[in-house]
Amino acid sequence: MQTDTKSKIDQTTTPSGQPVTVLRFEGDISSSSKEAVIGSYQSLSKATVKTVLLDFTKVEYINSSGIALVIQLLMEAANSGQKVLAFGLSAHFTKVFTMVGITKYAGLFPDQAAALATV
Image 1 (cartoon, rainbow, N blue to C red):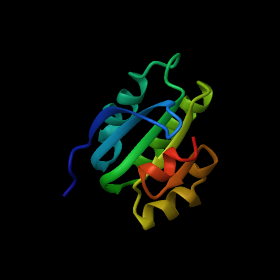
Image 2: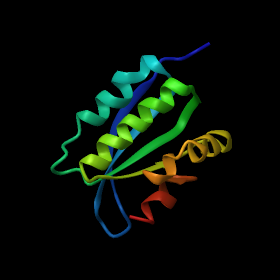
Image 3: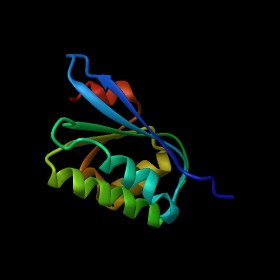
Image 4: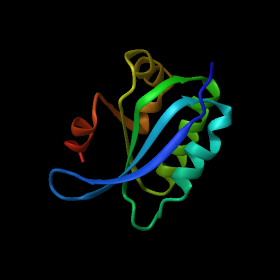
């Protein structure tokens, strides 16, 4: 059974003190997740938010429509000059994201600390 997608916007800093915005997703990501994925991303200030972390640690499942939403977010971020890093994907979805070319637009990391260490 599919669970609704929830998203939460957090703020953190890199080890060097740079501000980073974190979009934390929870539940399954599918075609019904547009508001949680795209809506939460579009609510961020393009002028002040330079780095965005996508937290998938509480995401159980992402279908092809959900992957399309993530790609849409990444394309918007690239057009805005923002850096995007993702973490917390299962081994399966890390492989899927790599196969569909998401790694060209976002670095994939095992956890938040590893992602922040590269900013």
